Length: 238
Image 1 (tube, helix red, strand yellow):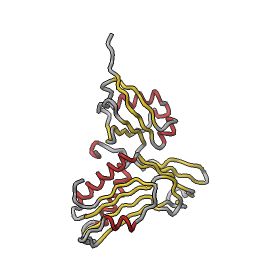
Image 2 (cartoon, rainbow, N blue to C red):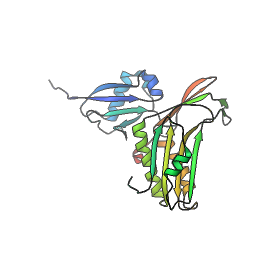
Image 3 (tube, helix red, strand yellow):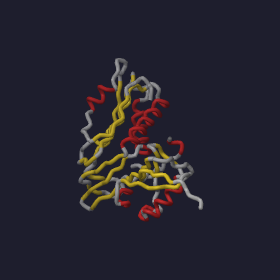
């Protein structure tokens, strides 16, 4: 009789998938040679609530795609689409602490720095665009190890487009955040204001919302719901 070699993997669930699976992590035993596509099918059998969902898969903190084989002992993270060596200062951080803009500005300021651009998102108490509604608080969570790696990727992409940028800070808060509270901060510094700091900060927040695994649950008078994005990473997002 042919016997298959089996590999044990650790599986992490985030955001809506944690609720649908009823757990934040588990272990699974997979046949050797199992691909990401095979794993998704096995997952749908084990957790029917996930069958048919758009599932993003990260293996060992990198996005993984259907044809890739899952290695033995892998850490697999499952989540819905998300709502180096430069010599310059860089900060990448997932934190439950308050954001201190003065501390971050000081950290990305060099003797040659003459300009810095900050973008900060915050919790709205009232949303007027689309179907208006009230928000009591937001609950943020992140796959922190991978999130900080992808923040570094965003910074590398910024440097490739705007080589005059000096310091970069990308910081995301997690936990329960009340209206008026800053939630995320993107900061870029440079020698002059006309060397790309405005564009770089805008690119940073837009790209963060595409590839950095951070999610938010919105809680209001009418109930609660996870806010999911529509962007699905491709192999070009590695």
